[in-house]
Image 1 (cartoon, rainbow, N blue to C red):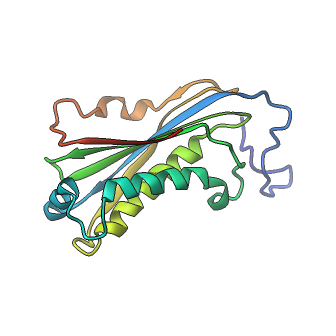
Image 2 (tube, rainbow, N blue to C red):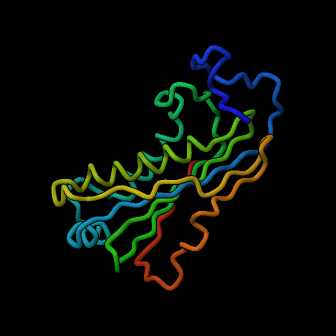
Length: 178
């Protein structure tokens, strides 16, 4: 299968999904931000001057997922049926991991929405904490899985051994859009 966002002349086009069937589709993406000890403790304690960092970041991530079509030119406008943002805080490496899971019943997948949701949530953490640490690093953003649609289920096997088993986590926070 070749690239689907180019016509026979190599020009960028939106994929025509008119003839496709609507199916339940889901995608999860993850990423993380490395922060200083001071930022980590302030986020955990809720003492960042701009407010509830993870609450605001979750809301921003959901908004980002919903508005992906405005950021990525060839993405379709999708009526998302669910978007969940979760955070895991790792005290050993002073990192905050974010996972975004998006669902839709539609003709095209939600991988880009999940990736955008994670990216926007992590960028929001950076924005809210940059007064304390301008050296934070955002990275390891990738699609974990996608289900549904013509291509079926896809699981990212490159990261299967990287589950954080045995690591201390100081908290998990979930925000869900229904």
